[in-house]
Length: 169
Image 1 (cartoon, helix red, strand yellow):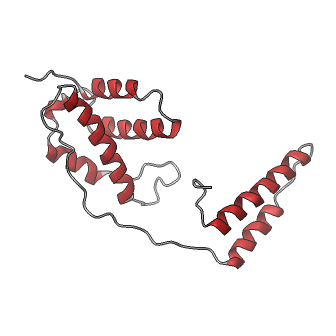
Image 2 (image 1 turned 90 degrees about the vertical axis):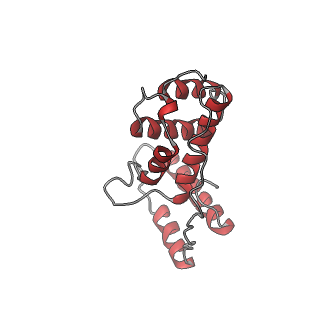
Image 3 (image 1 turned 30 degrees about the horizontal axis):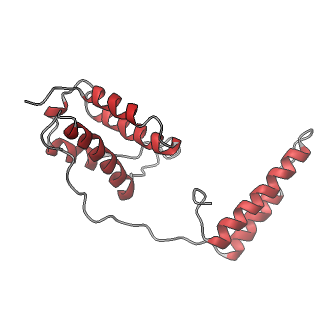
């Protein structure tokens, strides 16, 4: 017979083994854990979570970013897929540690929808650079503000001419 453990206990154990990961990786795990704890009761036995519950959890995910709250945006398929991968990994650890016999998150969400690229025109790029150049220079912070403007212009040029998103740049 497998041991009994709550969802909160499992997540605490999993985060303990991920302490030394990169900050972005750790933040992604924490985001997934927060979503799990919001959807499921933290005190639920992980043995009681069935595949039906897991599929409902993934399908109901909505976008909770502070920037997009109230704008009717939904979470992308790739973000749902990332949360599913991370949740599968968490429950695979539970399986490995003998807490469950089957991973309820062992399913696929199917083919991911992708969004098309929306490249900006050279005119739009020039307008961005002009806006940056016209940024306000604060009195007493002239050198700092001018350096920031030069860095931004360089950053936007690298992004534009290399076809990068801000996170990639």
